[in-house]
Image (cartoon, rainbow, N blue to C red; front, top):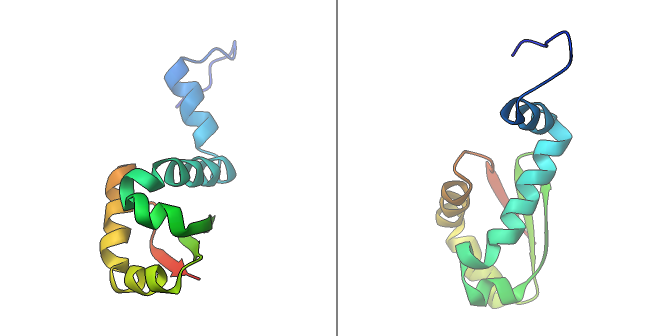
Length: 98
């Protein structure tokens, strides 16, 4: 993208510049996952999820139920696939379950 002399950008160029920053991109990805968590994982898993955050490209998820946690561990690869499909790109490379 070329920078114009008068510093005018189209909306698409401005959004691309804004989301190109790694810190901003991480925050947007984390917000998207948190916002869609109930739709992606379902009501039961969402109800037992206490918190989550993005560490690099790893999603760290905390549960308040050991039963749900163990079931989630067995279906970790499926969950990872569903999250990335929901986001539309390969944003999460690993799930860390605590």
